[in-house]
Length: 447
Figure (cartoon, helix red, strand yellow):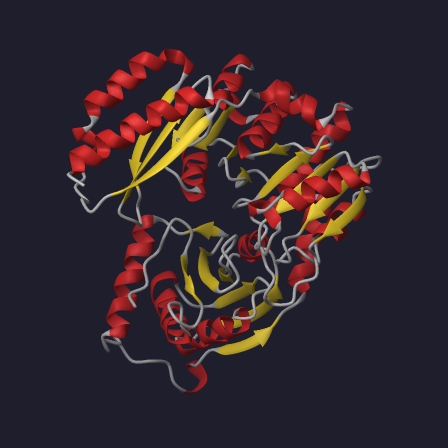
């Protein structure tokens, strides 16, 4: 298998696609491209995590790196350690994917996700290693790297969540249910919110190595919605397996996505004069209702390609501080170097606590979500001009919808798909337009 980077590292079925051999070679390539010195490795709760972490550590050490295994830790906790210590880091996780999958995310020193250019260099170096081209002698003797354990970084991350995020304020008086997805935040979610004074109920926090994301977490929030109602909670938080994203649930059991969370926090910061440049950064997939809500609040919206790393790149390029994705990846750039589900959840609950308003009320003020229909059109044609070939039907659809709707067509970066997304005042209208455009794509592709 040739390892290719997706929008968030590399993923595959553990021990079949993402093998120990590949992990070892990726470790070697990482040192050659990103540099040696000290490296940190964290993981989520998947049973295959230790296997892949050991192989990756061996690859890093074989190129002279000093490796520290920091154990089970949320992805943003690994990024935080990388940022504080200014060292390279890796997270073994497939995020919200099912248990059999696993993945490797790399952070450059400073807790930064890798750019496209760096990923291309890593792929080239990895290909050379797999072809038997070592491109130089390996370290020997005292230059060979070491592998050890460092578990104090978990306490430091918990301290960061409970002291740095909301300026010493507390969450007293709030009852919160947290779904830890049987993942990396299982030992952190209740502890962090409890230290801040919230009355916390934690569910799905008993990982057994195989139950991560299984019927729980941000991809399956139904049990959280029921638990919020059962416990009479003010809010619920649904994390994913590596806790770098979060969805919320209001007291009535209604689900809030990343757009609504970003909108609530953006308006709060804007009113307090703490929203840098009065701007938020989101991907092209964010709902039109979000854009309308931000315009009404006097907040500018900047779009990027799909992927939270592109949001982060734009935040840094332009000096903005808040952005994210509809999926629940939210980045507070003044507080973290990447998306952090617990940090986001704490920030959202802080708005509720300070305002004295319900989460539902804050969400209604932030935006009204328009119906959004997505159709994935599978096609054998990978011609980059395929989108241009349906420009006419797209223009006609946009003219019919006017300012009340939106059309977006984009090719998948990893599959032979064209994604057709339509937003409109009603679900029926959005679906009808999406189906028309999907048919136009199929016709243009000759499929």
